[in-house]
Structures are given as structure tokens and as C-alpha cells.
Length: 269
Image 1 (cartoon, one colour):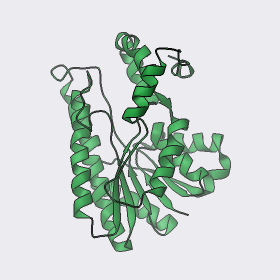
Image 2 (tube, rainbow, N blue to C red):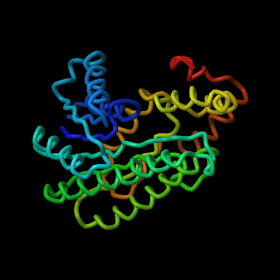
Image 3 (cartoon, rainbow, N blue to C red):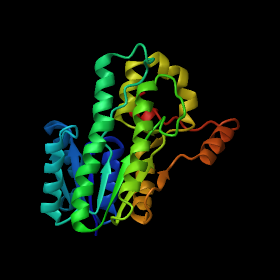
């Protein structure tokens, strides 16, 4: 039984990962950036899977604060004796603007959460795992991390590209420590963030809906796959990708012959 800490796990893919780990028999510390979001995660798990609550803990943590991230580590290690897997999932995607048009405060928020927050999580987890003698750290990547360009995602993609480099560097520096460092690319998953962006930019969403519908997936589909791959990973530097090039090509080809059920309807879009 592993103990897993997931930042940004009050909703979306983070919550889905936490629930999938619990269903696989592991212990999970869920983390939200506010007390309300953290309590909402507890309530959601209690409603959906009350039998799993004993394996879970909930903690509020702003990952841009080193002190709060350290407190998260201490709570997890105190509650479950050690931390086996740490997933830096907390992130922010604010898209729909060009690089010149995006508000400065949105740039700062993405830089702080996506980069500084993940760096804080890695440094804290790595130090704790060095004392333990082992552990796994995974960073959540996203669009742009491989250098590809998506309209409206110039700043977000830049943070994820930088995070890819950082993760490679961390894996090199920790290669003799017994700590495994990996990356996760979950693909295009319909989360609260995508729904929010669609409602804020309905015209942009309408133009891309048909194309996106061939590629997006639901959290409950993707999360169990990612969890199993995280558990199976035994080599540092690996990337776990749900939506790879072959799958993308296959779906686009299939879309020419049959229409995929609308993946957005169940989310009120």
C-alpha cells in the first residue's frame, strides 16, 4: 500500500487520480488551494465513495508557499508514516488570449502556480524522500511541453515547456538518490477548467468544438490508466502519455467516417 500526495486534487484530473489510487487500495492526501475547495473534495468523495474516506486525508495548501508545501509533506508523513508518491498536479490554464493581449496578472498567476508551485513541491518531496531513501515524484505537463504551438496558449505552453526542462534536470540531479522522477501528459481531459474556459469564450469554443471532440476524454477514463502507469514506473525520466501521436492520428481518421458521441454535453456545454 502506497501513500500518495497529489497537489491540486480538489477537482479535475487531480481528484480523479486520487480516487483511482484509493480504488487501487492506496492512501491519498488530497490538496486544494483553499479551504472551500478542499472541503468540496471531501464532500465529493464522501458522496461518491464513502467507503474510501478512511484511506484519505485532506489538506489546504497554496503550492506557491514553501512553508505550506512543507506543512503538506509533514501532514502526509505524520498521517501515513511516509510518502511514496508525490504528484505535482496543481496548475492553472488561462487560454484564449494572444501573448500580447493576455492580462499581466494572468501571466503572473500561471508562472507562479505552474512553475514556482511545482518547483516547491519537487524540492520539498525530494528532500523528504532522500531521508526515506526512496520515492517517486511526477510532474503534470500539458499542451506546449513538447514544443508544439496551440493558439491562445502561448504563456501556458511556455510554463509547461519550462517545466519539461526542469523535470529533466531534476531527474539528472537525483539519479543516484533512489528517487524516481517522471512526467505525466494526460492529454485533453474535460475538466472544470475546460468548461470554465468554454463558457468564458463561447465563440472560440464553438469553432474548435468539433475538432476537440475527437480528442478529449473524461477524467474517469484517463485517471485509472495514469495511476497504473505511475505505480508501474521503475525508471527515472520516463513520460506517461495518454494521448500519444498514434492515438491522435487514429481518432482523427476515425472521425472522417463516424461521428464520436459529444463529450461535452454531460458537462452542460
